[in-house]
Figure (cartoon, rainbow, N blue to C red):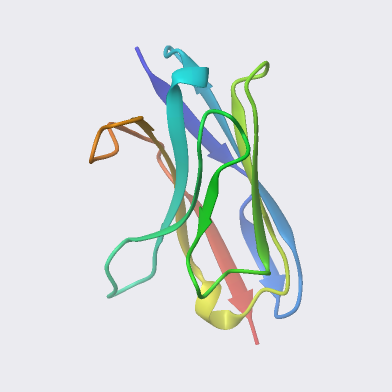
Length: 119
């Protein structure tokens, strides 16, 4: 059974930082592209960042580029998202997700972790 478990969310003031982590189990982690999504109230879920199995190829949404950094540890089956210079607009539930290379959709999802940024 595949499980993705996020942690690290919380309440932070604007300009602050958090480190979100996702622990994966039940899948061949190194075979999956890992992504971080977020969904704010009343808004659609959006892809924030992803990282390919090589740990080098990454993508960032324009709104977070330069502020967020994604990384993965294939030996520990974890993917992290360092979020810096947080803004109130970053307030959302952040989800970890996994998809195989070549797949068009993410197959596995975590339960989410809340990030709230106060102004």
